[in-house]
Length: 254
Ligand SMILES: Nc1ncnc2c1ncn2[C@@H]1O[C@H](COP(=O)(O)OP(=O)(O)OP(=O)(O)O)[C@@H](O)[C@H]1O
Ligand SMILES: [Mg+2]
Image 1: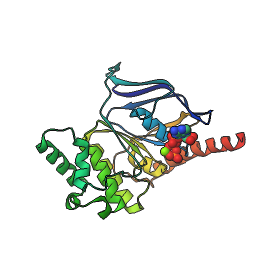
Image 2: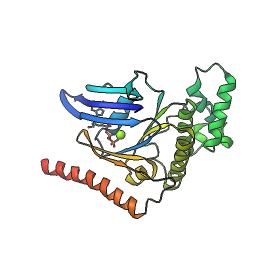
Image 3: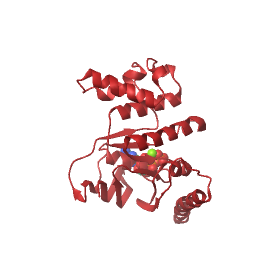
Image 4: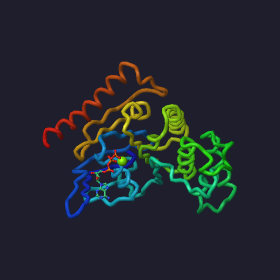
């Protein structure tokens, strides 16, 4: 068992002296080099979970442990997060934005070769000298992904990174992500609102609600996938039912 173990996680925000509980005893194990997708209704804590994982947010209780062969090793893997918006630096070119994550790398040859490698993988070669204002939204998101990949993290956390894209660009980037996952062997934790996207990408689909994991579905299916197949329709129904069921409970409670 090698990966990240979240044990008994709790998180309570304070808003105007009132407690906002988000997680209450959540447990999750993210296996090394697996592709985990997370869905759940708005406000259930998906972003908070990613922020806790990469240390941008403090947890209230519980533990985040790094495991190696079944033992806690205490060594945090190299992590990076991709947000819904690309957050590029407008005064830097595509290439410079991607190289930014390597600013501490002294070997300029290594910087050059790493950036060139991912420019090629992401089909950005032609636009390497363009500024963010000169490229499309889909390309900007690709640059953001490229910047993350240049950093060469072991774990990539993605918070609805394709949410702002049109269906066509979204599909292209989904396929690129699968290609990157297959060829670069990263651990990917991918948050999305879109159950179909989660089923298309993930090896495992997690549904979060009420501060806990409500569903944990293993998706043993090779890529590329036909999400319109009977099997995927069934899985989509199952995940949707869990989310709708919790919404109904909420409506009744109110
Ligand atoms: N800094 C904060 N202070 C107070 N409450 C917060 C803070 N950040 C998040 N919350 C609350 O925590 C809960 C979870 O927020 P989070 O952003 O993690 O949800 P989410 O699942 O990512 O939602 P969405 O799908 O809309 O992005 C929400 O109720 C939100 O209002
Ligand atoms: Mg969010």
